[in-house]
Image (tube, each protein chain N blue to C red):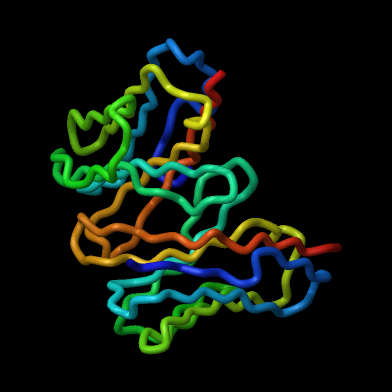
Length: 112
Length: 114
């Protein structure tokens, strides 16, 4: 374990479902991130939270909704997804970029 | 716009060989560069972090170098082992502080044959 825990590890959902991904970090970091990894594409930044405030939203569709209730927890709420949203969703945290990023193991999402 | 390129996309070597993975970036104004390892279907494991003011970092059999002016980094793996088989990702950070954004390459998929 890296200190960043993601649940669930795998998720299959229909296009009309609503689900949430959870990320928890026990490292005392002050920033958390959601990344998307699709086949044959580089990792793409989705959202950045710094001190529990959203500071970045990289033109992500509104069917993805992040929530950061405190500095240790990050959620990604999903609704009305499309099959092309199937991917590995990775959570990361950092304490100032000087010290690099720590990633979780990811949630493998399949939309059917 | 910063772009990160990794060459080769895939590499297969026999066990025991020394090898070099390459990473290049288009904008030299980076804050730092990080190498990660990713096993199939898994998350990322940080290997080495090089600050923009540094030239190299070493950890065990791994050595990463950084030439910021030419926009290049290399990851050297000595005496490769089958357990080193994974995808290796290079990422550059554009800004300092906790709001930094990592730009990733597509990775080099390494296979070390026994």
